[in-house]
Image (cartoon, rainbow, N blue to C red; front, top):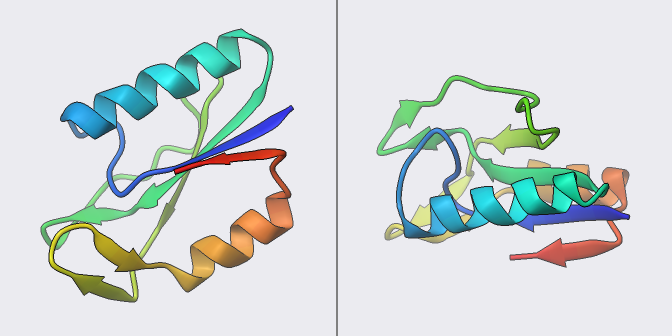
Length: 93
């Protein structure tokens, strides 16, 4: 099964949501699922180093937000297009 996790921030950043999504994605990959994490490519204006695939089998896809209001309300048109192309069976946000 293809599982997509959508989160504002992800590994290597640390925090409650970041760690939660990391462990969920890792457990899903260990269970044999194809796992994608869709997330931002920057935090506080600093661009993050892209990492395509983690050793645990999780694929990370990073996107530049077009619009950001406050800290967490963001809009990623390119993310939506990529999700439609990847056609996940489950989307967890």
